[in-house]
Amino acid sequence: MLPTMKIGDHDITRLIAGSNPFTGKSHMTPEVDADMKAYFTDEQAFAMLRRCEEAGINAVQSRGNQPIMGLLGRYRAAGGSLLWLATTGKNLTTFDEELDAMMAYNPAAVCIHGELADELYMTGMLDRLEGLLDKIRRKNVPCGICAHFPEVLAWAEEHNLRPDYYMASVYNLTQPDRSHDVNPTGERFEDSDIPKMYAVIRELSAPAIALKILGAGRRCADQAQVKAAFNEAFASIKRGDGVLVGMFDKYCDQPRLNAEYTLEAIRQAEGI
Image (cartoon, rainbow, N blue to C red; front, side, top):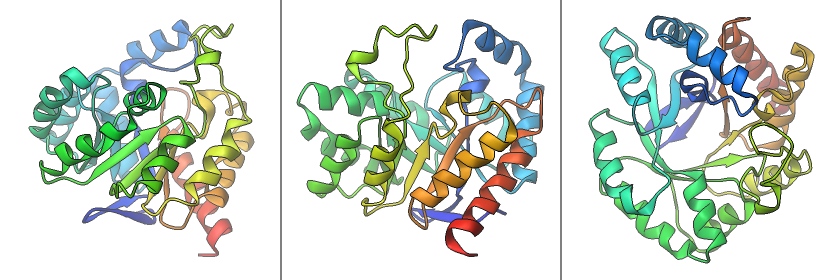
């Protein structure tokens, strides 16, 4: 197994598989979305998740909704053993209902959705975060906060919210002044965001999971660029932090390659 980080009582590998490719959310183009959706039948999804386990990855992260919960449930029924890091819905009005539903699928931990935390920040309601964390704690699972704005995570630290972990996007896709980009997704990936989020991650008191380290494919022109992004991530985060990477294995064995890059990056950054 790959080196691990601690979330609650769980030893989670410092490379975690993301779920967006399974539902065709590429953050790239409609064509890439369609390619992912067509490829990831249950059979292909199960095969890739098994390759994740074979490569030493022990956890997958996803939204706590369908169809992904059903997919993970079927994978476990077929013998899969990946731990599930769940993310809540984006809407305060359905938060309780969705949290109750995901408990049936035995999450190892539950994180407040990044877009929900961002919305609370932009509307001046970050004081709601503590109550949402308490709702998760009452389910007897570790709780986390995700955000695209570094300010959200800094605020949580300043106000001593004490989540069990954080999830931090190195690209701020929620920034309002980026809503009319020429990119087909309507999102703009600004490399200037990256050092800002890494700087905050290094100051967090709880383990952090960095996401979008590959820019949703924008930093994947070749394997040298992918490897460099892993090296940058592990050189920029703390010991005991990890990364979350969506994997689309149609064209290459991304679980194996990403596991190799993770191990090498950790060795370079931490001398182990």
